[in-house]
Length: 356
Image 1 (spheres, helix red, strand yellow):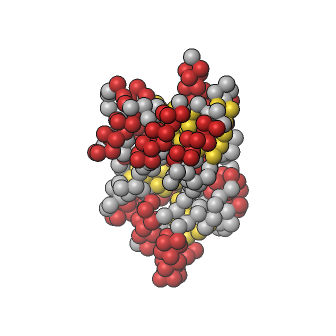
Image 2 (cartoon, helix red, strand yellow):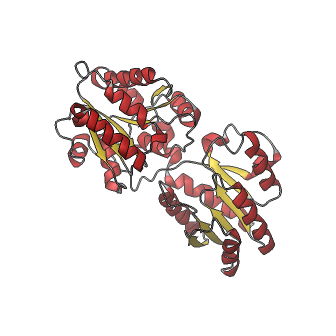
Image 3 (tube, rainbow, N blue to C red):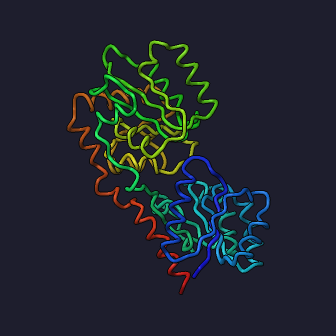
């Protein structure tokens, strides 16, 4: 039996969820798993000692984004203890671009980091070299046990949205920050022509960072007439909350600017419950949506284009339901590739190779 120390260096956003998925994956693969969430970012040597004390042969770091110098130190200490290091890298550009590329090339070639997992969409375009035989793809997964479709009228009631059965609900969900394009959404709401398109609701649901809370409150103070078109749920969301908000929505909005690097898990969830998405026309998410046709894309730096895209989305839902239905169902053949079982099987296969 392989014993693995599973280390999560952060606890925000989706990280606790993915920590649970990884623990399930390795346990079902026949591993003994030691989960560590204490802060060892200043003391990688102590983490290596802890792994050695418990007889672990691997340290698997759940999120290695931006931790190259820390991983160098951890890798050196682990080499001395006969322990291998692996992890998941979610930021889809930093692994292959600029000076960071040479750092990762060194870490892999020196086997200070033995295996790196990356989202599979990134892996499709990876540079070809011997080093990249140890960069392996994983699906950015969703859990069908938790994400259940909810009938729309029922979901609207659960979300306390009254008199909007025929309205167009745009959803922003997750950890909310200004870096994720909240300014664009408020600009759309501020310049929306409610005389022409009156049934517009924007839901902002999830834990909201303090600067974004200030932005939202200032917006409401200066636009009191728009407050009824904006619903704010500022807290970590339960599984039922997530199901209800997806069920209540007509569109999932992920207008991340180009400088914000992100995994596609939120978009995958929208695909799983047949909700079209509105995203930027760049990066991994933009490429996915343009390829599948399961939503609309726009240049997030052009506010007029963002507004026009929302108008097109609104009109499709209200007046062209065939188009809306086509976008809703466009990802049906693909979304099963991201189910949790596929995610688990990736790690089971990897563990089976380590047994050989």
